Image: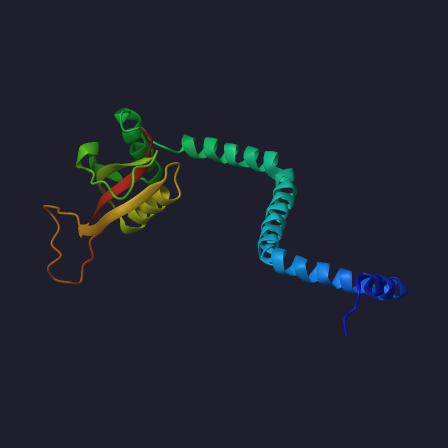
Amino acid sequence: MAISNEQLIAGLKKNPLMVAAITVSIAMAAGLYFRGDLAAAATTELEAKAQEGQKMINNIKNSSQLKAQLATVTTAVIEMEKRLVKPSQLAANLQYFYEVEAATETKLVDLRQMPISTVKARGPKTVYQPVTFAVSVVGTYPRLIAFLQKLERGDRYCRILDAGFFVAVSKTANFMSGLDRPDTLTLNLNLELLGQP
């Protein structure tokens, strides 16, 4: 049984809703077939745009305090640079130790600023560099401890590399009996002050 074109057209005109539904179904199936691979790329692009938008929202929210934070950091850097030493200013660097000596009532026996070339490079270069000193100071134990504390809490950034307490050698002292304690000790220090070239 063969259907002629006129019969087919008449059947389609009788059921226009069914014809429209079939046409839409065929169009959707073709769209899914030809454009289905673009959904994954669109989803990835949407996620990237959402992350970028969230980053912008966070930047806007965090930038409201940026000027105040910059002012705080600038003030801190200025205060920090006041505490730095310069290797070329030998007199000013040694004066710092003389002030600590006077404040703690100890006596500096030896004070030397070591040349920068003898300091071994430790890691990557930075704006700041250590300035090494060899210090030998004599005094009573409490005063030597006060000397160390003054260095630790002082006006300069100090790092003690090596320290040793020794009995101060005196011609009149005789501590061989073990009952007498020496009144005077010597403190030998190798230390670094944070410096700026």
